[in-house]
Image (cartoon, rainbow, N blue to C red; front, side, top):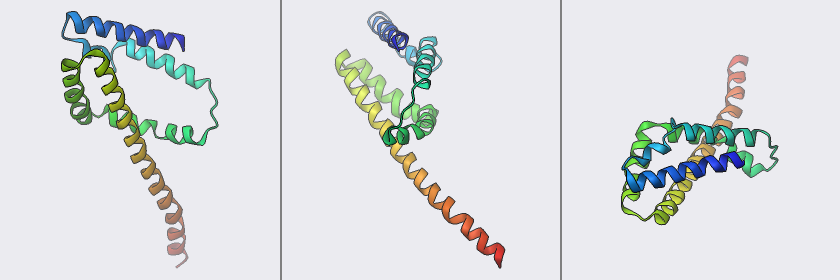
Length: 140
């Protein structure tokens, strides 16, 4: 976990330097940036060793892939992130930028989890009724 936090601090430091001296610091946050890949790898390794029995956390964890698919979609990324966050990045002071981005990303994350939880409930309903419907048709 210390390596993950250190990697995130390096990303933040490089971003602050790039914001001050160069106008390209948003590239540091791309999924293909080596620091982001390294931080993600250490984050995954840290949580792979944990056993969590909380129903709430496990429910949210069941929707993480759906959140990733939403975040990775180029159309969503361009509309939700690039335009909005870049506008804040250019106009806001650092503390306001960090607060807005954190709130914005948490809001989008929980909306995506909520949408996926509805999808899971609908799929369970279909999965429970479909075999019964098929069995009745086979009996006829």
